[in-house]
Structures are given as C-alpha cells and as structure tokens.
Image (cartoon, rainbow, N blue to C red; front, side, top):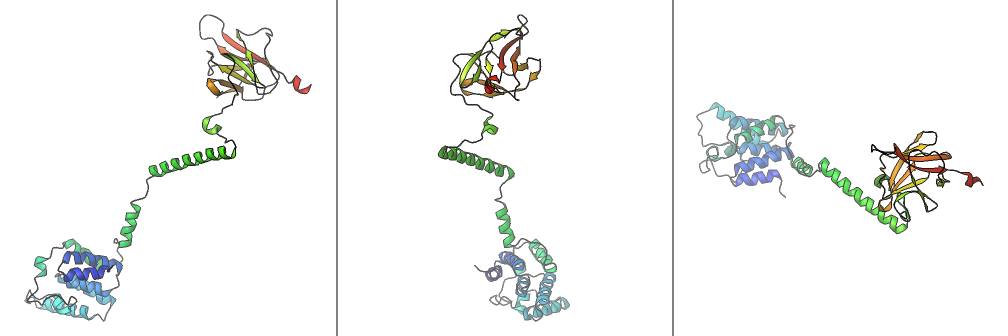
Length: 311
C-alpha cells in the first residue's frame, strides 16, 4: 500500500487539494523528519506565511534541500515586491510538483481549492510542534480496537456463563467417575432418606427406621414411653403435620434451649437436628399454642442414652 506521502502526491497531481492535505497531514505523523513532506505541503497552498513555516521546517530537517531554499527565496522576493503577478505561485519556483502546468496555464489554486482553513492552521501548528499528540494510523487502529472492549456488565455475564459451564462439567465428571460433589453450600444442607415416613407425623429416624413421637399437650410430667436415640446428634422428621418448623424449639430437661437446624428432605419431609452434640437425658421439641384455648404449648419428646454403646 502506498505511503500517506505518496497518496498525498498523487492526490495533488490530480488536483484534489483537500484530499492531498489530509494525506500529507498523516504523512507528517508517520514521517515527521522527512523534509519532502513539508515542501509538498508548502507547494500546494497559497498562504505565504504558512509556506514560510513549512519550508523553514523542511530546512531545519534538511538544510541542503534545494526546493525549500528556492521557495524561501521566492517568498522573500514576493514580500519585497507586492506588485508581483498573482498568477505566480510557489510551485512554479520550487517545482516539487513537476507535472503541474506552468503559471500561465494552471488554474488558480487559491480561488478553486476547497480545503478547510482549519486544516492549514493545524498543519502550521504541527510544523511548530511536531511532538504534539495527533492521531496516527496506529493510534486510530488502537482506538478502534479499544472500541470493542467489553463493559463490566458484559464481563460479569461472561463470568457467570463460564461458572455455569464449569459447574456442568463438574456434574458430568462426578457422574462419570462416581464421586459426590460438596453441593451443600449451593443447594443448602440436604440429608438423603431412603424413604418417607410410613404416615404423617413426627418421627425419630435412626438405623434407617422410623420411631413415631406422639404429641403431648402440655409439659410432660412422666415417662410416656418416649423413643430413645443412641447418637449424640439425633434426626427428627416432620412430615405432613401442622407443626411450624420456624416456631419449634428444642428444650432440654433442665429447661435450657438447644439450637437446632432445619433441612429439606425428600418428598417434603423436614429434618430437624441439634446444632451440637446432646448429653444423655430427656429432650422435647416445643411449639407454643397460638390459640387461646388449650395448653400453652405442644411437645414431642425423646430420650438420648449412650448406655447401649458401652455394653
């Protein structure tokens, strides 16, 4: 692909002065130390002050540049003799654009040129300060590339999609290699039950067996044949009862309340377990009676005994 300088020369030869200036402006960014670029710019404009700036810049880069020397000599002569014919142009003396017709035949550029004065002023500023930050072709390409950068929201969505695919991959791997994933932190604590209780009610579940716990209206005053657990963290199941798991509390025989946690089992079964290991003794799940009539609370009691472990 032709350089910006060559494209500017081609456009100037074809009489497309505005296009030539744009190409030459890019050429300054690409080749700021090329004196030829500055000479060509001076050759296609008719502002003598700007021409002098561009030619001095060319001589600053290349003190032996003949077209620039001739051009400055012409400008000095032109300033001394303001009666010089308006049809004389800088390019007739510097000859940087040799295919241009002679001054008697060429059209007057100043009257037919369509470029913006701001473009010429900008070129003058570039001549005074070539280090000024202008957009080069690479910078423009970089800006275009940056335009395709993802927003934080899009990055977040891609992250979620990536996590979903990773999770699916882990599930597939667990099925393929037969291992369980620790999904409690995602799905919540779940205890697997081989089956549901035989009927609705409250049950102590131990050794894969269901031991029904009968409801007592009011605080129990005697042993009513409560089921006994031999483990320090027993499991109590609620299934299809009117018991409110959010209102129920675990009470030790001393009157102390024991923290409990509720888990979701299969088929709507609610699993209640203490948050700590229990000592031997009597424990009751208590639920206050919200109705005005009847006892203050209902109880479902069971015992904890480790005697069978040590026998």
